[in-house]
Image (cartoon, rainbow, N blue to C red):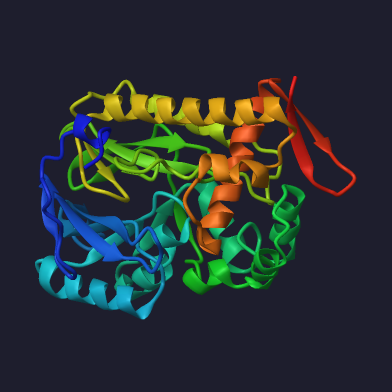
Length: 363
């Protein structure tokens, strides 16, 4: 546990759900942990006890579960879900699938889950923000933002000129569809400030930006529980990137403004993150994230004062460890996000040089 983590409280200690099993973490909330084939090797998913009106029996309820987030589409993940269906659902169905945002580890199996639990009398629907639903549909049918020629040109314009890396990015034309092969044909829209009634309790939707197009976290005041998705993580900082689809975005500023929307919640809120362990100390963690990005911005500013810098130039400053290609693309996006934050603050100027690379200099 690092020094920052020591400022947080982990109410379940080192306990983790076993593969194909769950842990109870709050009233009506079960914690699932599934493996990922990346450096970030797991994702937390949630089962919420639920009920809906029975259309055939007025006044009666159908008991079941809401799934929050899904994991990427692969046979190992499906097998884990089937084990959970067998042992953890108390013989009840999944009634709906709610997804915090469109990244593959969160939405990859949404289509499969909705199909798996749709019956002749009940449609198991996807609940998600409109922006992320449509972003996922586009990405599952193209290479936008995750690989292909457009991504290669974008990263090249920010200084990533290694031929092998650029070639692999250009050839990575099925990155997103490989993990999100299909999307449900319809969905229920969730929006900031709206409430979703789950299991007799109200969960308020809180939108967040900078990490995903329209990320939705869920807060239940009655139980003091926040499903934070990727917006607030206890051990690592959320990836905040600029990509070719929106090449001049101010993602970092949007993210920092978004996490401040959680400050009205109680410091002792039980935070259920998508990666890491459930924790208490929400305000403390928000402060840590602001401090982290303030320090990174200071490092970037110092580098650009010494000499004009591209995003690739500041990678060793922001990420001194060795990175694989998967990590490098995320790191490049994050480097651009930090440069753009200072550029939008008019602390840096940006110039497209004769070699086709953007470089940033102090004003």
